[in-house]
Image (tube, rainbow, N blue to C red):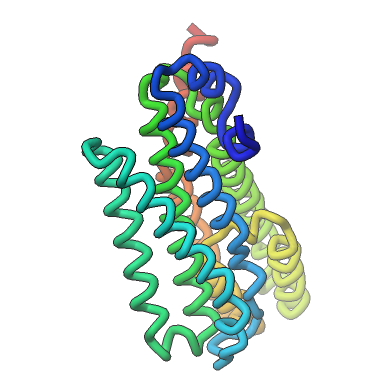
Length: 278
């Protein structure tokens, strides 16, 4: 087994792979998938961020270009080898077409000066591409492991459990943030509104400093920056700004809960709770 396979697959998958007649073809495809995922993981989109909104800045593209080039090359190389090895597999071919389509779409966007000259827009596009590419690559691995469909996916592909835990942690952090904001906002009009606004800003600053903030979509990070800036008011305007902020955070919660991995987790948790209380 290669280091790539060891990093990608859990023990049940590794044992099964060693027992397959076409283990060489499977190992080659999964090892290529592991390499492509490693390259995508190295595309640390968050490192290109700046706190300023709409700041014209080509330096983001200058920083990102080498890693974007490496990512696209890895995608094209992997899909080419996968296409050769699994040309007659419709499920794999569909995923190859999807990955290539997303890579081509990114390439077209990177030729748009309005995108590469805006740090926020560029980072948002790169983040969306990375997320889709990683999901598709993990989908390739899961499809190759389809005979093991009865196993927990997290046991076969441990990295999927990491993503689920990140989503759950982010949901928990946002839930706590909403409760804290709601509690502090009750003091609006009763005490010094500027002091309340400062406390609300401190809550958001603490949230932004948490690791989970980096797991949010860039577009949502940008919205949060705008919402934080809108809190520098008093009276009814502050009340309205807080209501808008809570509404935005509740939308984020809803979006997180609708993610397939989180939905599956919630469903399994509810079934287990029902079993334990029956």
